[in-house]
Length: 221
Image (cartoon, rainbow, N blue to C red; front, side, top):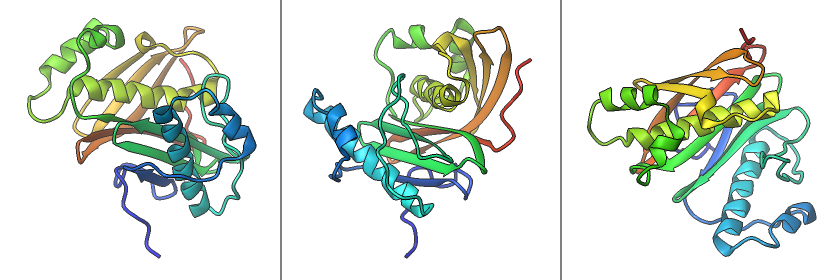
């Protein structure tokens, strides 16, 4: 059976398995997962369940047996041994992308509605230099401020499971190009890293992705 198309088509290497959904999905949860939903409001639980349904579908494409996908200490998803991956959910799209660790060092994906950020948010998430670059980008149908926010989310999702250190919005200087993004990261120890990724827009949803092939995680300078 051919794989279903996703909002990330053309953005991820072929060895990354991805699944997404624009509607709520309902799958049985493992007890460990169910325990995490006990205090969630209905909408948050729907995100939690649906994104795990996507993750299980993606893992199934790799032939990986189902296991509980319990959030870690920073809210990051836990994955089976030998797997790296990322989850994302926003209004209108939930998604998961996974790969074998022998193929990828890190994966980060994010999705956001293609609409401007609420007033004042860009001043929190973007540096003066980033805001200047945003103003220089061409007008049109892309909400560049929201895209920058999404790009930083993808960078963090790739970063944290690998480095296990906090990364604030101010710690990653992100530049957006034609379908591409580049992040200059200032780590906690003063080291500098560069991560690259890509972005697209699909039916009103901005999607961003950072994938680092195995053995290519950048050495800090």
